[in-house]
Amino acid sequence: MSDKNIFGGGNANSLYTPMSEIEQEVLSRLAENGDLRVIIVGWGYVDKPRITIGDLRLSLAFRLTFDRPEVPVPLYYLDLELRTRSDVLLFKERQPTTYGGVPVQAGAGVFFDLAWDIAIKAIDPALVKTLMPSAMGLTSRFQDKDTGALTLTGNLRLTAAERKALEVLRKGEAAAKADTARRLRKHGGS
Image 1 (cartoon, rainbow, N blue to C red):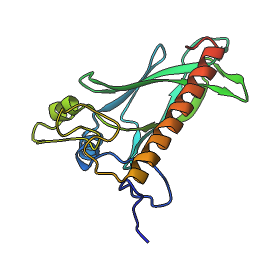
Image 2: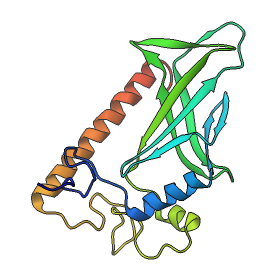
Image 3: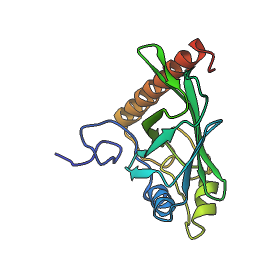
Image 4: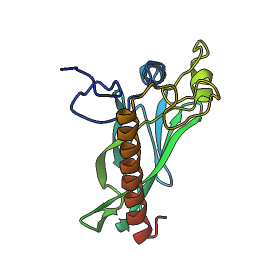
């Protein structure tokens, strides 16, 4: 039995598509240099969050301590941005902050220990080459070798069964994303 999944991911028991080694190296360098910052739009920022890098996910753990308002208010979502210290936007996402449909309460002195997990399908090749100028050739598994564009299969050589599994995987990812968007819309967080 292989120790990799059908797409080369390090967890043989899970179906996902890993980042390329170059993409993982870019994230490792940013983390090692303390160059990652989480912006909590409207609330503040966290320099140097605790970072775990996998072959699919980037996990950022941090404490968010509110300094306002005096009287707690319901908070339905947070707008999060991952930026370099030189202010290059790497990723942004709106995350719901409800539990059982009830919003958390934010106010002066309240804190939350949060973990922001980002599943990375691909990092823009232009960004990879900006952050790692020595990178040559294709930088993502999903970069088409002929056009350079990011596509469903990129430069992977897949059997018909693997391609079908990838299509099902991407449909599931899209459904999960749509569910999160639906929950956010429900509370005015489009």
